[in-house]
Image 1 (cartoon, helix red, strand yellow):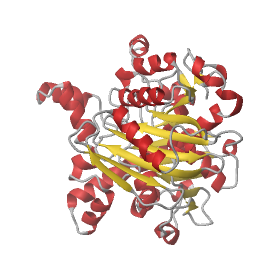
Image 2 (cartoon, rainbow, N blue to C red):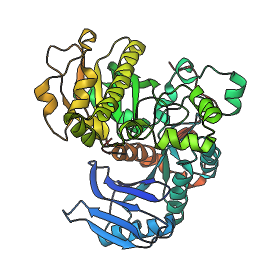
Image 3 (cartoon, rainbow, N blue to C red):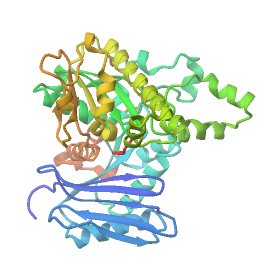
Length: 435
């Protein structure tokens, strides 16, 4: 091989799963993708799909005891397609990391200091950061010579001004325990806001966008000129919109009430609000297709769940319109946002005075392409923009490590050209699923 290596492997490591894609950044094409799930269980599953030659999906059903074994199995599948991890064409490995706190404002080349900081953030991301670290350590053991980059879900939201990021609680207590609004889904919000600007034929710096990432987890963001100024998720992904199993916004006193009156423990309340609430709590389903089917059949609980979901969504659109002052586009993305036309129609209905409208014919079209679904007369564009978090992670990883940026990547140091880890809080800088 001659020239600069252009391939990037993207890893998204969960507590019992690893999702991966191999991309060629010379043209953004995908070479392979796959999923390892049920890691540590009696029967694990690896589904691998080579994409560069039109091959079909291959499946393995066998015990995979840990993340090290999972990545070794992934490496074997890639090697079988001539895409092995030992290839000189592999430029870097990019890792999705859910929580970067305030220190990580950009993609960052991983070293011991970065790993230690991700570990320090485990108390505010106990379900996600430990799993992300497992993937990082395993990949580094397999390719210690290769630049490894962390791309943080929270990074895009670190531009929020303090007025949006602060909770109105005692400052000393908040600072001592890192209590503030961080936001999540940042990689998706960054990608979609930029792609929305492209769809409108403008630069990101020229456009104000409200991004609605509607999946099983759901979040909204207000993006002014390419920079996030507010987002609906907070200290954790629980705050904000109604989600598949999460409540979204709720009076904090509900927790005290449940403890005192119902005798529930903190752990029980945590499970209630994160896993037994949202659409599931309201009607027993978190698949928007099934909810809409039930609504059409006259099911009152499903209708209530849908109405609560839309009410919260509409409220955030209005709030972020006020935050931005001028809105050029509202962009729907992720599993529900991209596929559920009734959700888009209901969320925009009644907002005509704000310059928002949906064309019924355009809204009904099913497509994997970014598109405008508002009528020509609408003052604000309403768009459907498929998200691509893996491509965004690969882009950020390749931009950081290509050429001279890779020099010294294995020698440590996360400042300067190696990423965006800062020791200070920023100044006032003004999963596609069915539900």
